Amino acid sequence: MLVLYNSLTRGFEPFVPLNDDEVKMYTCGPSIYQRPHIGNYRTFLLEDVLQRYLEYRGYRVIRTLNFTDIEDKSIEEAQKQKTDVFELTQRYAEVFFEDLRMLRIKPPTHNPRSSTSVEQAVFLIKELLKKGYAYWYKGNVYFDPLKFKGFGKLAHLDMSRWPRIKRRYHRDTYPGNRWNLGDFILWHGYKEGDTVYWDTAIGRGRPAWNIQDPAMVVQTLGFTIDIFCGGEDNLVRHHDYVIAVTESVSGKQLACYWLHFAHLLVNWKKMSKSKGNLIYTDDLLKAGYTGEEIRFFLIYGYYRMKRNFSYDRFKNTVLKLKHACEMIETI
Image (cartoon, rainbow, N blue to C red; front, side):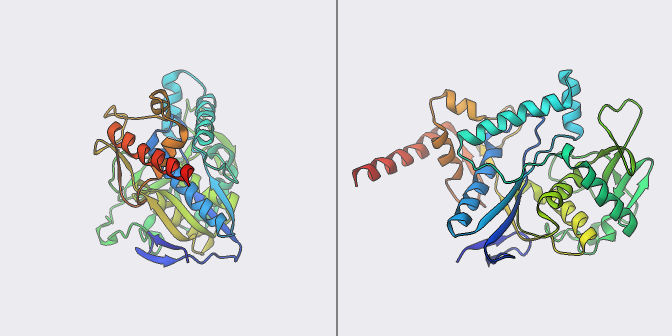
């Protein structure tokens, strides 16, 4: 029997799909305003292993891996590079799929983008406004977490700490692992000078990051799925926002199982652009390693434990793969 650690219940549970022979799985994909590093690929590889094992067990896996292509960061990066945001994100989308092939990660069943799910996002926002979970303020739409019973159940938030004074958070994402104790934005209303917007049933503007994943999961898999996956950083803000939005509209549980994968560190430090310690697949390929060896290193070890990268550790792990292959050849 397959047993999974469910982040929602904080316990190990036997896997029982909603349908006997089918599994619906949503895997949070990259924000494609920049190139993913090997830490990002650890999550995608572990999700690939899960999918392959489910298929080995006889299930038909319907998997969505989304692209976040329209957000504050992508728009700002496009302006910085003096290029069109869609040209920027398409460039990194192509790089991402090249890396998937090199790492032998199975392509997803569905690969929606934020920009291709605007109509679905607008539908969800209209329903949230109608039900009183969301409201307009100065041209934007915000979600009030206090209106959703059970908000923070995934991260097990202590909602007694939530301030009763109204606070609104206007950006798509915020740095760090701190909770924004206030209302989060769903819709960026059009402002003079905006270069990315749509004319929709709720007016001109663009969907915020917090409505994009709900729109893409509903668009491709429906309101109820088996497994929702992502990196452990998604336990701060993001996945509880997804739950609140989708379950407020449907009144149904979004996912039965929530899996979160631990980060890859570099010399025991978090990988980040500001630290200058980002490592890409190209760096390892140029050092003479293969895609198979990179794949092995990133999936080696327990998925809920942080894994540390150093070139010595990488080399020693690759040697284990080589010794295993040599042993198999001699049998």
